[in-house]
Length: 465
Image: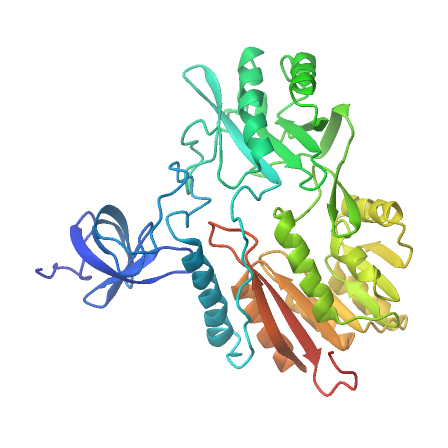
């Protein structure tokens, strides 16, 4: 094949044949032309493909798959053909998905954290990696005079098509969503238009209790108006007895944030319930609650193991949310202190503690990096700190505050291996060492992976086990 002219070996819109050599942590295949890497979604290592170059940068480019000339034995037929951008790995065998995520964790520990000596255990996958989500947030739009629901095309705000079923949604949610859309059209509900800031319905949220079977349906609207509100609620109640809660959330802002500040219960309760192990939790529209309940129990059991707490230990849960991890830890510890910046979450955490009859927990509203130094001055010396930050990881100020408390052990739960590795490097340089790393597949068929790390203070007198 003749080499293309120009600054790069390939040009935009050029069609060419390429062999896929590797795969990125997001699941795109990687091939090279004269050493120049091209990233091609929906391709797998070992495959030969005809592609179209769609974007060219100085050091790498992107391609679109046109035709497969040789396929990988790890390729499977996708269950869903919408390819909304959420389940970008559905063309890949589950075994290869797990291997890819395992490699991602290995790579960041080596390249970012420089901790290649720390054991990364085999990733814990699911027996059935489908229909695991207990929460969906579906945008709405209008097409040909009808309200439609579905996910946005990747990197756009354009809904691909009406989506009645999804491979990762729970079966109950796949049953309810089309009926909700039918009711919206029956009673003339209009879709929100983000360009004109007009229309009624912005999003439909559905939450389920995996182990209780309870369901909550939330209509996110621009104003208090929702056409046919009473009739919609009545038909939902009659059709689906497992719906315990119908709620309207009002978001009148020009924003991509889904939920607004005002919430009205249209029928039923303001919460639904679910269980993790022996504990029961109340879940509101705003609650952070892990979306994969089966793997959540796996993750929390591992957190308990790594915390290695007994009845003499004091624990700080630095991003406690509604108290899920805190209450797990409190079953073993002498005392648990939870910190969370969202006041509503702390109120939920207190109610969850009361609901489960747990009285050795104390929840505080505030930023952990400010609360922990104050506790330190008051003489609080925790044996263990558990941290489960958002994807951006921990702020340097928080890491400093945590190390200043000098806990013997830290359990770090992360949904972003790269920011985790960055933070582990800081902790290593600050007198702590990672002992072992356990990836957990919380999000099958997507490029995301959850990781939990056991960390110990160097020269500590108390053994980890």
